[in-house]
Length: 118
Length: 111
Image: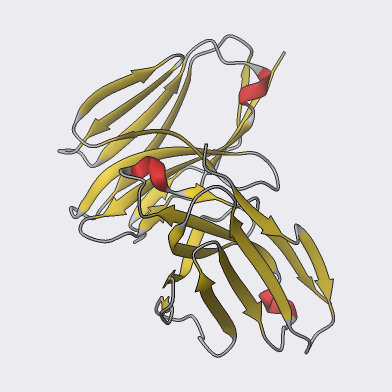
């Protein structure tokens, strides 16, 4: 089945630094990638949707200059948290959907990245 | 009011019990209704999805949708310790790729 690899699984960084999270579709071409954020005991909140080769569409309230999303190829999307602060500490999850996959089974999630900003 | 409401639990049941997990929603534009299972520190995996009101069965799992009441349920029969996880309901917004998730219900099945 479709597999999405997300790295790193866990990262600790100092306040003010930037962190890059990668999301790769291993056996299919992901035309659309979704980035979510999940706080403890809360639901997944969609941050942005990106289509290969075009700019990401951010949800209301998400700072596009802080959360940089790049979807330069059909198998790779990256989320860069710039000038990270402790309040950015969260669990970030990507999801990919391929052009050839029909229906709701087409959403494949990565394993998530636990970001801790100290 | 949140678009999707889900009791966070935790829900603790003995092995073999029937588990009932529920979500309510307020947006009539939701089109598909899904249940995901999420193990600790992992991404969600799709269990079932359905479109219309009624029941859909897959092994020990049954998904139920009542559009008139804006209420969906997931039933797990003969629950096993390996079913211990967080269960998230999710709904797709019509004519978009967006999924709206519930908060998730943490389930613990003890031997």
